[in-house]
Length: 130
Image 1 (tube, rainbow, N blue to C red):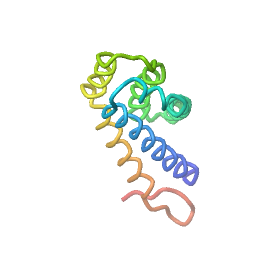
Image 2 (image 1 turned 135 degrees about the vertical axis):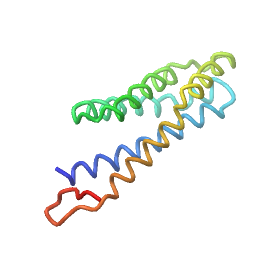
Image 3 (image 1 turned 120 degrees about the vertical axis):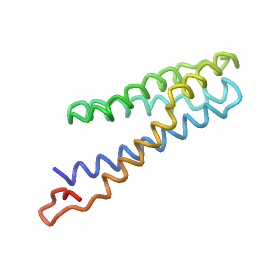
Image 4 (image 1 turned 45 degrees about the horizontal axis):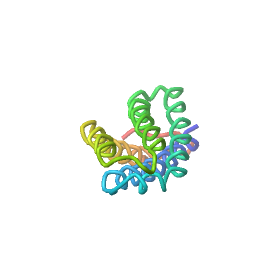
């Protein structure tokens, strides 16, 4: 159903905004306490991310599923970060996020989903092609 798909696209876009914020906080954070203080929020992001990834798999949207899979791995690692994590440990995570271009991938995917959600629908509620 195109209406449900549109709702899903908007919801996934919101999830990506929250996830991007968490990644930016990690990249710019100073120590393990900063990361650990947001652990519950990141754990919620992991749970939501799994649902969106499974939905993308079922829908056959492999590009979205692949980015969400990669994102899930990093979110799990962040959620498991101890308050006493060393600066070196955090730097390893930051480099991993940077070398994978994960923030860039999240931003690009979010913009693509926003574009798809804005596509006009015809009067029967079906997506129209431009």
